[in-house]
Length: 213
Image (cartoon, rainbow, N blue to C red; front, side):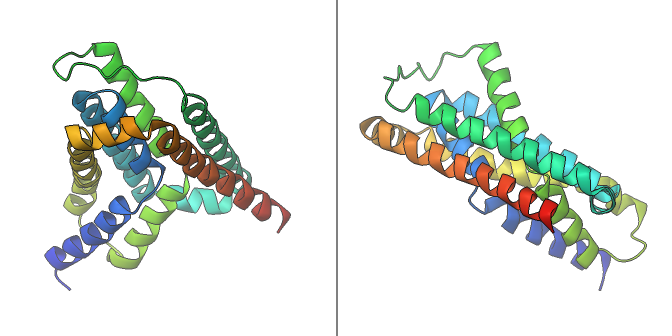
């Protein structure tokens, strides 16, 4: 298989992983609706950076380290799960609070930085992401890949992750989804909080199961 074919196969697998529903999708869409389009785009960049970091760590052999140092993997899963549970509870808590929809032209730098950081932390809260990346690389990369291929993967992963979530942010910052959200805010927020919290509990449960085995 040629280098180009390998590259396309890996990028295709990474794209499928990026568009799979999860807490990242829920968070970016909610930020785009409740804050502003720029906040949604900032969150998309945060997701992209988180994916690039995990991709780089996977290429550097983080998955091998996690498989050999079991307590580190368990600690990361527990921490990530606890963060997602906290995030879910936070969203649930504000479900009944009224929302002031901001002017689409107005933004504050601290708001954009907060959206960026919030998304970045959410993206890296699940260490399984690095394992998924490593699994894809292990299955599709040749035993001795050329250096140029290893160098370009982190920026390509950033482009895939950020590009997908830019589309999500643009879609959910339009007037129609925003109006729909405002009409059903309590139930949408509670559903989002439940989904994110449930994913966090699943991470915690998986880590406890691994600890017992």
